[in-house]
Amino acid sequence: MHIVDNLELIKKISTPSPSKIVLLVIDGLGGLPNPKTGKTELETANTPNLDQLAANSICGLIDPVSPGITPGSTPGHLALFGYDPVKFNIGRGVVAALGIDFDLKPEDIAARGNFCTVDEAGLVTDRRAGRIPTEECTKLCQLLDGIAVEGVKLFVRPVKEHRFVVIFRGEGLAPEVSDSDPQQTGVAPGAVKALNPQADMTATIANKFVAQARAILAKHHPANMVILRGFSRKSNLPTMDEVYKLKPAAIAAYPMYRGLARLVGMQLLKTGPAITEEFDALKQNYADYDFFFLHIKGADSAGEDGDFDRKAKVIEEIDRALPSLTGLEPDVIVVTGDHSTPALLKGHSWHPVPVLLYSRWCRADKVGGFSEQACIMGGLSRFPAIQIMPLAMANALKLAKFGA
Image (cartoon, rainbow, N blue to C red; front, side):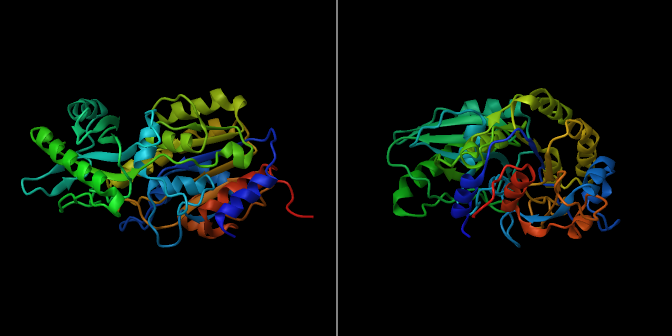
């Protein structure tokens, strides 16, 4: 069945109820074994609370897009929310802009940017400019903000650390252009290229902006260049309220994930950056919503930095905080990730991600712990991430019978 029909089906049979669902997303959760120990970051971490929860759950592995496809964060999360990530291919720029509450106009084009480091030959040596602090990013954005190119106004706004967003506002623009971000080091940033004739103007203006930015940033090492990706326009997705009859809320410290939640109609809740603060936000708002998306970023950042031990420690910190979630006794708890980020690869990968689903109706399997190896043997087997929401809804008794 095509996902559009599936959303329409869920929309027809979903029913409001007091039961509550918590979706805990440990960003970049999946990993690869350390050659010295044969264990992944999750398998290395001491996780008694996750293991106990898994022992009372049904477990498996999910493919965010499909086997062999390495997902970005946007498709990874959209799949977890039940939206076909191929059909609803939302650009990173729009998500970043919404995440910082920028007032996007229908004609605006948004692109996600990184401050990066290039050497004297113009080759990228660090795609994240050493993860400069957000305060430094803000100062650099002020240097670039307000540039006008051929009558098109450019807004440059900080997001977090090395990340920023640039919004192109003017007539004659189209988002169908290539990225300048090469997604690797040792090569030069690419030129932004039009993917159809209607986008020629956008490509020209983007390249002129990059050239001006390089000149302005020349003396600001390590953030002496910019790379862009995810050119996109705001699109209207069916909201989670419309599809699932839910009152959904999001707890996320990183702006991008707040933008994703906003895109599907979640209420954004206030939280601090610490893991304990995010769990506290869940507790403080628990009575007011029936679906919670709780996002934890640190494991992904550690994986991208190639820091195996730090990623394991982040997972352990989440495990220590978990009793404040389970103590609320949600009707359904799902714990998983949006993709794998093995420290050995220093980036996202195609490897399937562990998942557990707890409810009193889940028909628990024999899995005794939460890990890649354990979840291979789970009752959910290996399945598409897009199926998580229907399963969560069913276990929360929020889906009526289909057919006579």
